[in-house]
Image 1: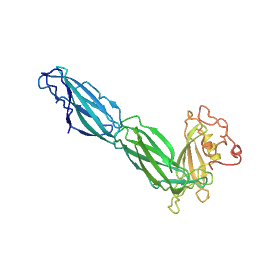
Image 2 (image 1 turned 30 degrees about the vertical axis):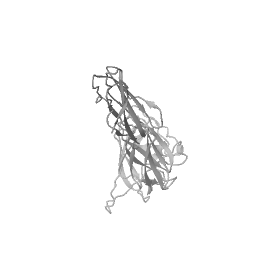
Image 3 (image 1 turned 180 degrees about the horizontal axis):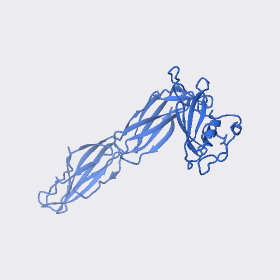
Image 4 (image 1 turned 90 degrees about the vertical axis):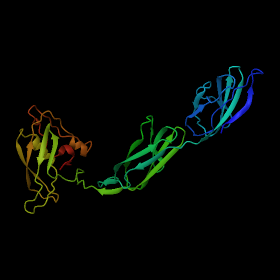
Length: 342
């Protein structure tokens, strides 16, 4: 309850000083707007003509509200503690009286955050190098008494990414976590507001290995039916049988080798070229038709360098008809004896 101050100055012997009323004591949170109203003040024998606010802050020092000479005004305390808010009112005869209210300010709540994502993400082991993989994690956060300053991601306590949050409408942020081993580790998100308050959440990550059979050539795990590739300026479609008619079982074939690619790339548009594919056990004899599409506007797709960087491409070029004007050697000599897509 505000205390009616007895202090005041009377302008004349017959004048009664005004009655100052600063309002009721208040409870607030740091960063919250506190509204002040002294319009309940009055003058028994005249009118109140002036207001003058003064605020004593915790630890000493004074400040003024948004409008220090208004009957109603406001201020925003940033520091927890007690604020002594005094109003001085003046009547039409120049007499003054004061009244003080007390605002108890509690610390503002900090931000909060919740982290979600896989605890057992998959990493792939291709048989060479360390297993690797990626997983996406989402941090959903809320503001406390202050705007969020930044979000920080940590792996085992070491910072990896820090992002400033300038948009007050942002309440979630994604993180793509790259894993280069099967080691268990802890992923942590840390949210910090402009007042330095923070919140964290963590996920224990235990990568699970998936073995990938990439074959002896470092390619994929086999050619199993239909494939398209760019070669010699053409889009080439390979169609191979996937069912062993004698057993009814699905058969997985290897991809075309360099000699077969050159054969179809130098064929006439629309011509069908008979080739052979090996099954996964190395047995030959699976006959198929390779159809050659006439797409002379296509450029050579460097599929060889995708598999074996730095080896190079056979010297093929495309004429206006879409066929190769110079057939590459089929002995793979341009690849140091290695057939990168056999």
